[in-house]
Image 1 (cartoon, rainbow, N blue to C red):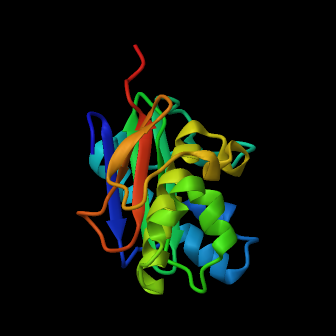
Image 2: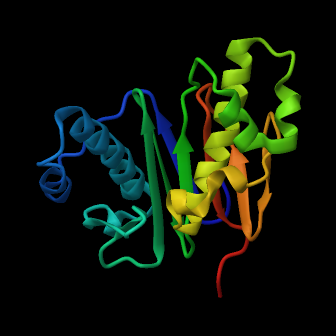
Length: 197
């Protein structure tokens, strides 16, 4: 993805059996537990490849839901899942955000205007299914950015300017990449454009 940033996307996630993950999901509804364990399984598989020492670390959550690895503050992590697709990102020396967003129909014109503002007209004339896909790509970029910032929904992802048919770009100090060449399901990743220090 970039120097010190790795991403994995899977349509067949293997759930985590890590004791920390099992304990942290014990009280969740069964469907939510399956999703969380699937996402954590993808994250742990990626960690085993790129930062093996951190693969067994407990995953903690900030007040905004940003995950962090206990004992590994220098390793940024992010996980996303939606309807059977899971993705994880790991960044050494910087934060990272990843988002999976399956297209939704029916489309909300209000959501289109909110996410795209003056760019909303760029969806005019597209078939409904294609409009839904392109909005999902935009939203995946916007969500990845607020995850990388650690602000979550409070970071107002809809306020991040992203063009229709996104490929890559910047949002403030972040670089974002829509992984259009790697998957047909909208998945995007964001991380600080420069590594600290």
